[in-house]
Amino acid sequence: MTSLPITLTINGHRHELEVDPRVTLLDLLRERLDLTGTKKGCDRGQCGACTVLVDGKRINSCLALAVSQDGANVMTIEGVARGEELHPVQAAFIAHDGFQCGFCTPGQIMSTLGLIAEGQAGDDPERIREGLSGNICRCAAYGGIVEAVLEAQQQLAQADRRTAA
Amino acid sequence: MRDFDYIRPATIPDAIAAAAEPGSAYLAGGTNLLDLMKGGVTSPERIVDISRLPELNRIERLDDGGLRIGALVRNADLAHDAAFARTYPAVAEALLSGASAQLRNAATVGGNLLQRTRCSYFYDTASACNKREPSAGCAALGGENRLHAVLGWSDACIATHPSDFCVPLVALDAVVEIEGKAGRRHVTLAEFHRLPGDTPQRENALEPGDLIVAVRLPAEAASFAANARYLKVRERTSYAFAVVSAAAALVVDGGKIRAARLALGGVAAKPWRSRSAEAVLLGAGANEANFIRAADAALADASPSGDNAFKIELARRIVVRALMSAQAGTPERLPALPASPFSNIPGARHDA
Image (cartoon, rainbow over all chains, first blue to last red; front, side, top):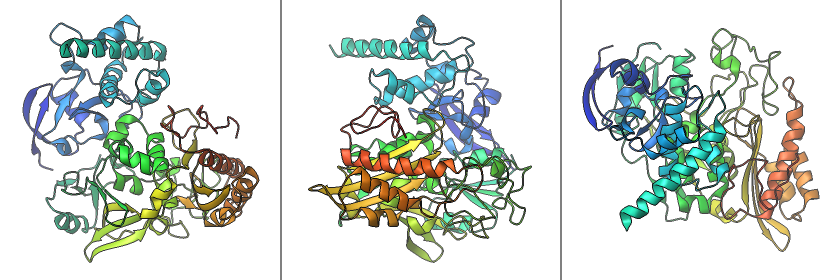
């Protein structure tokens, strides 16, 4: 099979690429573009370690063919911080021990960004747990993760109010 | 993954022509197809990517009071459409009880109908499976089969259809709009999926090239908005397929049931509409005794296909609870755990 031309905007940078149609978005990010922050856990859509935002929505990049995402705007964990300054979600995960080994963390953080943007969970811990149920943490750092999400939401809401004022 | 040709047609007729060729498969959200391709369960020679086809991602209110949901509408977009969730709450609840937020952002309406069973022997290419390879035999018979079918199964196949979405849809008389080489046609969802019989590889009414373009709900489906629930028992709190599920919808007036809809999930190769249970309920008092009679009618023809006799009694109890929850009324806001038997909402019981 010949490679096909696609264009992707990844973390604000435009990439023109030739891809084998079998390549998933996950493998393209990791193997071609050296964006290895996005993790390959199960590779079958069951663990959430590969979560990225595509056009602002969280998806499992292991179940997306790169060629089918032609033209999309992708955000990975590498695009979340602003230079050396951590995003409030990243800072909150550190502050609340929202991880142990850290393997699932990029996916947890991308999924949290999606969850907050969706605006369905509010500050209900049960809704947050349900909203993040697609991200498995084998170290079971779930307690810290939920605390981190609650604090990050609060920080982001405060920042929004400051901007609006 | 086996090599394949990839094409992205610009129009529906082009897509149908391409997909009518042997060895073709449509790609929309890809959440099930890619999983199957990675496991070697299916190996299409040609992928027809329909994910950008125009006009298939709209939710349209029809002049006759019905609703037309485009086949490419994402599960999350449909469930979070405020007007949709208000009018068809059991459908929204079923959607949000399925998969994970990431998968619901990718998975489509049409793809949900066409998802394959999660029978582990179907997925394991080293096991015999009549659905994957006709006449190969069925490793699930006599295998690990506690989650398999208790209604409508055959000696050729005891797999279940895993959809949540389809369960309230079939209860509400949903119709599948299909476009093929001979034009458009409508098939009721109740008739869309097939029972296995001797040909478990034939899972639905689609012919080669046929494309689901929309799912329609008739006007009457909106009349159950005040009393409609979906209830789903899983082996973990969230992000799991149904062991057994039920969609119940009622119109109650003066304590009497004026209209009733009931369907079961996780029990058969298709979403299981129970008209016999609905007949018991119609005109009867809306009370637990009659809900139990309805549950008995719904499971009257059930039989275990293996180590799963427990599912029959479980299904009866879930039917009763779903009907009681529907009678108690659609909650103002969906519970934190949609469709969960552990939801702390009025009318919910914590035993089954």
